[in-house]
Length: 111
Image (tube, rainbow, N blue to C red; front, top):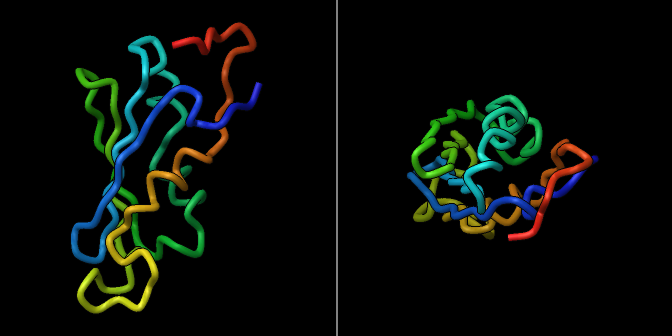
């Protein structure tokens, strides 16, 4: 079944110059493998088509049940020079959590 990422994870984002930084953290340890397997750099790049003009780097933090993404060339030059409404990348986390992923039909989504 397809579910929004927000059902099993929370996220936090910000800026690193012209790059947006977004951490995605599973609510439960057993949900981390779903994140790890489905949130690839390519999938995140596709999700942010038209927003992320550069590469996407992915970093795994299994001890935190988390993935961190750096979306290069996303913020129009960064907070001090960008004309974008979200020049600091604060909304990237909200947008990330709207991504749909495949989950097993028997996935217990109770927290």
